[in-house]
Length: 466
Image 1: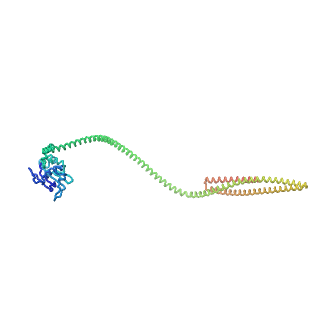
Image 2: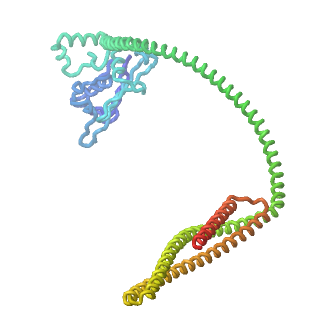
Image 3: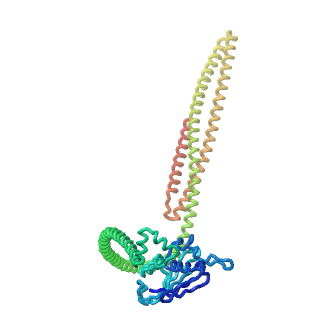
């Protein structure tokens, strides 16, 4: 590979685009100090992957960008492009088939560098390996800067060895060896990771096999469940079909029953209408019977009240008869006593009168006795009159009781007449026997019995008085 052209834009002192054509043979750049000869060499180092700002004679990599001058503003980026002839196809893969290689490096202030080969963005390591395989690079001994000869003479053996290896074209092999070692270590790490992954996969495989067996078992059970469900659904469907047929038959029977019931209902309604027409006279008769029954109920209530009054009157008459009998007995006794006393006094008066007539000489004494007898007679007369008055009072009371008895008899007779009228009305109504009427009849009979007993008591009292 041979360098053909070098193009610089904004690199250090080359603010404008500058191109250097490198022809076969020797190419020299001549100029005074400070004209940028060293910058050309550093641009070659920089485009071939130099990453040391100190090697670029700066504090940072941004120092390679044009910093400005009195009449020129600073640039924001710098770019170096190197064109290489690859006609002999000595470039490594994947650039072997390209006859021309254009390697460029661009740096933007504050953003870092980017590398490109034939317009394709690559890594800094790819650019460094490209030039290392060609026995050159940023640290190639062919690139001698100022003071480097003195440094080589004073360099340590290890540094001299590195320079000789670069000169012998084996520096790239060391780099590739280092990369191969790194790759080998990475491969070993990957193998270890693969072993771990293999063990994990074995564990996972065991678990998956177990899960596969379970899944297979689940599939079989699911298939059995689906078959059983299908059988169950068929049985249910068959039962539903049979039930539907039975329901259809029952529905037909129900329809027939409904039709028959509707027909019977129509007949019943017709019969009911006919019965209603026929029941009108019966209802009228029932209304009349109800009115009569209501009147009989009122009459029964009135008879109950009459019965209660008759019973009370009978009780009072019984008590009055007993009291009158006692008064008559007492007055009779008193009358007997008065009559006996009157007879005794009369006898005494007659005896005294006889004695007076027989013995005129005893006149004063007899007069006194006569006066005493006369007083006794008057007292006896007064007692007789009192007893007679008492007997008259008793007779008046007996007369009053007889009048009340006759009034009670008249009321009983009226009740009997009303009962007979009610019975006639009842017989006219036909068989209308009710417990209320029977009770009224029994109460009337009891009232009649009580009235009979009262009459007997009055008659007994009158007999006792006579």
